[in-house]
Length: 320
Length: 240
Image 1 (cartoon, chains in turn green, orange):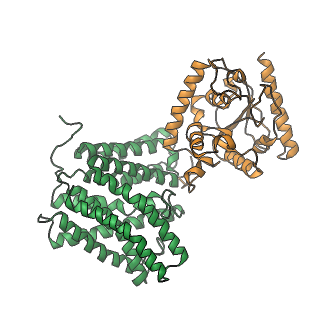
Image 2 (spheres, helix red, strand yellow):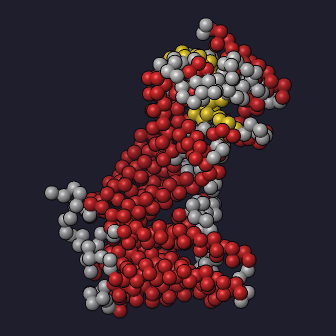
Image 3 (cartoon, chains in turn brown, red):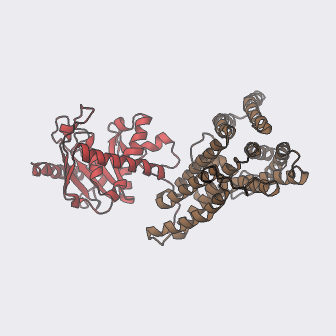
């Protein structure tokens, strides 16, 4: 295990252990209203289940992480399909699911060429498969929703699976650092928004978000992620202030945009939550929305400036 | 096909155990896979173990929605009626099952929802609200109900009185109701038996009836029940 990965995992465990104490102190000093307190406890209890489910596969090794990401992609698509009504178009849904399974396979096989090819191939197949219903009315909307869902929950989230392949273990440490910082990004935005937030960020899309919260999260998350990346890539080409700051800001911004994207989707659909899977949070997508764009952004940033060995043929399953 | 509209699943926003019991439950990709596997297994079982014979398939309407009603003596009944439908119609079939048997525990409810595609009927507390939900669904989307108007399995194999509740679902509508009679299920698997005997089953499907002219009120419901009871009992006698 990468030493930084170990320390992040230990930090998450310690954080979860200390959180109830913070709640108790806040409660004793009378700073928590009963509704907020019960909401916080529900969310905390969900995190006690979620955190091991997310960190466990990452620590267990690359194959467990890749399969875990594949399951998450499928579950996110399921939630999206049931909220929009896409699930009624079974051929399109089946192709999206097939595309996700193949992406998972390509990641497990470390066949980057196929991983990339699957975007255009699956999109082509989605456009073609929808022909067979012979119902031109609504064709564009059905196909577009299928492509939209596959791009977000298949291709974008799939980058987390491929990231787990990185040979010297830095991928694992990166993934843990990203998970931790993306989730804290939300917490920072919430807290600094409460303290300094006045002007609304996007009142039509998400009425509770403020510019103060967004900037607070940008500063705090960037600092934390830059520190973690510095520890992970110590002494390499990425270990320069300009890269560290750029990656930190990129993570915080893409994380917040992911959050806003899902808010837009929910507003458009007219639903409050996309599911009921996680008590206190809503559906999986209500929790994992911020991760969607961070994965590809970080993956390609690291690959461009440091290299993830993608130009090397590996193909552990299909090779030779 | 109309323009695209966002339309969440009927059971969207319900927790899993509640969505199994929901009368508006809709099946996705996962449910399609489990139910298709289940239907293939049941079809093989009924053909192989019970040498199922079906007469009158031509009476089955070409398209949903419609209702299949039959005599009820055995747990085999709903399986047989659903299996008698032409393959493209089968995924629209919802057996209406006793809530207190098929939806009592979460594990059984999971099986009833994901395999049987059953919808619950709560016999002790079934108000007009539930019947209205069933009626709305039947009239608004492609749906086939498989139901047993006697309300319970006949313990001696004879045909019992049809309850009028069914009338609430189909009165004043053009939804066809297909009467059926299943021979042999009482001998093969009566209510007091766990494992079925390898005895033959013979399903007879009759010509559909519609009740568009029958008033949606108590007298009309009773008239519908009486007509269907007569149709099913005629199918029984025709088979002898």
